[in-house]
Amino acid sequence: MKRRVRAGIAGAGFIGAVHIEALRRLGYVDVAALADVSGAREKADALGVPRGYADYREMLDKEHLDVLHICTPNDTHLAVGSDALEHGVHILCEKPMTKTLAEAEALARLAREKGLLGGMNFMYRFYPNVMEMRDMVQGGEAGRIYTVHGSYLQDWLYYDTDYSWRLDSAQSGQSRAFADIGSHWIDMVEWITGQRVTEVLADFETFHKTRKKPLGKAETFSNKPQGPGGYEEVDIDTEDYAAVLFRFSGGAHGSCVISQVYGGRKNQAIVSVGGSQCALHWDSEEVNTLWIGKRESANRSLVRDPALLHPNAAAIAAYPGGHAEGFGDAVKQNFSAFYQNVLSGGALEPLYATLEDGMREMRICEKIIESARGDRWVTL
Ligand SMILES: NC(=O)c1ccc[n+]([C@@H]2O[C@H](COP(=O)([O-])OP(=O)(O)OC[C@H]3O[C@@H](n4cnc5c(N)ncnc54)[C@H](O)[C@@H]3O)[C@@H](O)[C@H]2O)c1
Image (cartoon, rainbow, N blue to C red; front, side, top):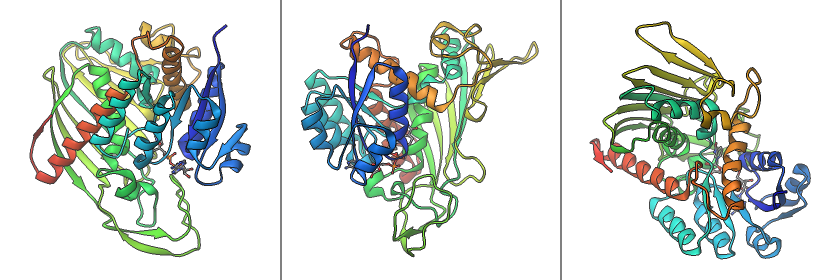
């Protein structure tokens, strides 16, 4: 039988609860405790977690964790992650890795010095049809890759009355839309193609230059009108929209549109790969289907089915064909890859995004910000 692993969660908001559920589905991880600056005990009770701490440092001192999951706002990731590493605890960090590239470098360096593992929750890699695209592209079936394009669209910040900590650059960082969701898109594209971004040209826009920040608490991803407590008008200095052109190391050219103010799209990521042998198109709102486009024959729609997928993709498709798998399943598969490496003492070749990958995404993001501000191509 596998050894059991003890996990703790820092930050039990939207994604913290997702982490807890996904960890339980692995079967060999005990979620020993959570920490949250707001209502830790109540959150622990509601999620069936034995103990809730107001201060994650007390949790680290008392709980003898193997892994800490960092699910707090971006500006806290460096401190929370560093404290965990100093306690000899592996870390599984939410994206973006930190608020700045310098912070990401410091966190990755500390993990290396301590000889501890660090994983990122770039879970898009673990949708079976995304892995299938990777298997096909890297196995040569798509031929030479000419283009990669796509988008990541949301509407939860559509109105100027929508508010969250993500709109405060002091908490979220200098980029918002790209760092928050474009980071998933570019990690997925580099993962699928095996090509590295070498140059970027970006156009940013902030459509709501001011927003109505509620004086009471604002919920992330809430499309309800904010509470009755009144609001203050605040200036917004991060982008609602980013369009980016990319040049890749293997000669591919790419482009994406990232928006958090696109009506009706709740959370839609699209990746389209144009190769010399076929085209591949995946849409997270049609998560179980992969479109394969050909010129000389009829196009195909591959419905996710482990019996039909390439080996790496089949390995992460947990259910038979026709039984839909989605967001929670991709998170579970990402954690499974990370925890298997924890159990092997770091002996496995990681398929999950490492802290080095998280740092790389931060570097791409900083170059995109530089490009948008300077209105010019920037080389990585
Ligand atoms: N991988 C994904 O698809 C995905 C999805 C959503 C969020 N995220 C990332 O996860 C992180 C959290 O986002 P969220 O949407 O869950 O936010 P959220 O606001 O819903 O939850 C954050 C929680 O952290 C708590 N918190 C704040 N500071 C803390 C501290 N110092 N110590 C302990 N708890 C603290 C808050 O009280 C809150 O409960 C962000 O970095 C975000 O980018 C990733």
